[in-house]
Image 1 (cartoon, rainbow, N blue to C red):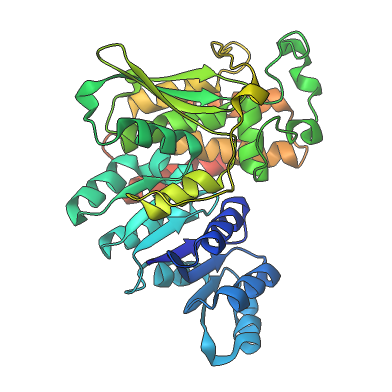
Image 2: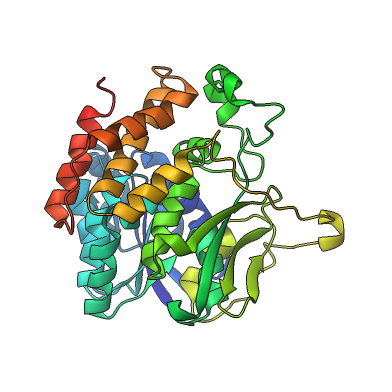
Length: 382
């Protein structure tokens, strides 16, 4: 039985994780749940799974939850609550599914408390990959991937060293604007928020769906892969695969390619992270190759989607630049969703902010957070 703390239980990854726990009641116990603002769903999850502790961002909502639950469950709030849950003594693994940068401090706290972590929040490794992985080595804990792409690479590598790898190939669906004939670059300014939120393959949260439309999600995943698998950016590539059946591939130095395939369902990589190193039976994912018929692959169009090259630059230069890339993108996506900027201006905002930033090499965590704050303050200026 694995005792699991789930940070971000009411979001897309969080609700999928709850499904996995319900599929495997003899193997997974949810002992801690944290949510942002959805107190109703958190209350429902708590009554069903009876965790020892929960947390919500708003202290007033925490009091309401405590009143509703009585003394059976401890209720915490805010950042302090996340840290309390991340370091619960009885936890075996902490799954971090909080959107944005709020998961970074709980991730480090969990590692320092000797807990394995499963990472669904790209920002943790994009901003502070070197610090997180160094801490994980220091405390002898595992950092397991929840992203379908990184889970695929992890499964293909199967413990083989980086020296055996020619390149990691992250697959991208290409998003809703992949077709150049339908969506030439000149038409990008006409893209509405509603259209950008219609992903062809996956049902995801708002931020990651917009990132998939710009391909920033793939850029962030490249930086994440660089740290997760201890491999330089030059050996991390992207290939567009519209069917989203091949979740990623590893090309080894002898020319062999291994790929992990399945129909798209986030429950599968979540389950693998939580049951690793075992595999548990599940009927949730069924892959019918005759029905799928054809798998196709294309080069990413970096002229229409420059996010990949911006991310490569951030990953190669390193220091505080990946944190700036990430923060500027978060601000730009929010501005686009609120109709303050148009679709091409998301990438333009990130590029301009990166160009204006003075990189700090080998930064401390405090310097990374300062760079993040600087980018959030300055990205929409100018």
